[in-house]
Length: 446
Image (tube, rainbow, N blue to C red; front, side, top):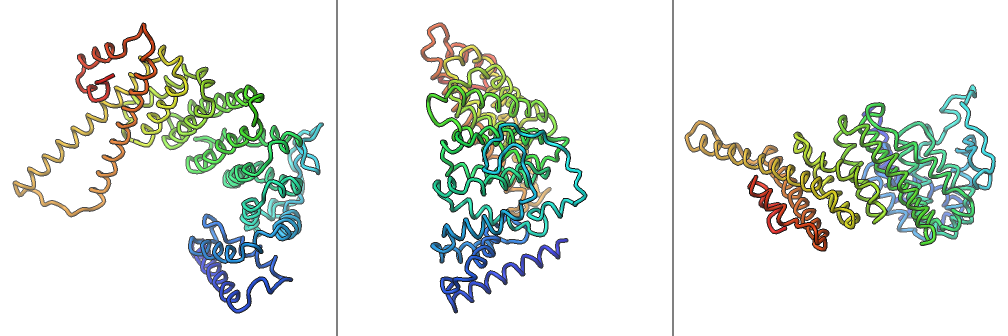
């Protein structure tokens, strides 16, 4: 399989370079009859993440298309040739019961039923197998449509997008979510409201949040969730653009936060550090978007983040601690009117994490001193700079970043409580410092 992929990548690179040479001899603008076919072919190699494409090939393809920017982004080629003549036929057998032929929400959608067609998956989904490159062409189209073209060609754009999101493959779902985010950047809110597809898109993406370990392997889960949550956030921004719709937007974000982020973390917190890190990173984005409305989740988020920071083995995976410290900072920033009642839990997480990092730093210093003594005594020869030294430097850098985040979170907590007359955080922190001097660097000066 590896040999086949490498061979395919080599052929792709040679083909693009050959087209560049032909373009030098006869510019693409002169080939009016076959220009749409050539543009579509080149567009299929513009994504370096595709298995048939390398970074060099993608760069060469994009360079060739940018050289003919007017032609490669021409509305006629994008819409008539790529969307209507090339992409639409390949998705013709995909019927979504939630939408009409005009890409509007169906008033009475038929229930989804299992496909009992005798045709194989390869026959009904040519876009996924022998013509898999079409998804990259579709991406190129979405990257170069403006709001007017999106509105005019809505029925051509939506069916392929929903088909990708509804596919059972996590990789295809991830591509669909990524393309949805791309489309939403140029989708007029009025169009989404008029067609009623905001709810349809929301319902299509929400199941992606349940693809979690152990039923879904860690790597595909991370790949999908990293695209699904931003897609939902972008969707709700377009669905509810005005202040009058703010309450509806908050209700929807609350649903995603509760049923996606909190439920997802509860499911996989002990089985996957990478997925847990991603979910906490996404919590930060949603808390920032929700603002003061995020206070309704304080009792869950503060406890969750403090438990992560105080976990005995938390330092084994620094990215998780860094994400938790950053998110705690945003929890305090957005929920400061109510944070007073949770200050003990916040300080617990910050202080325990600080102490554990200090303990590891002290142990590492002792080990380095012992190594130096062994070298001086001739018992051990010093190795040259290698992977071990690079790893140590990376770990030290991560620890510094975490400690900086912890300090920032505590300073913000102190600022949030400065106007609380009945609370003296400085006095409370001084008591903690007296009982354990290791937290002085964190709590001193509250």
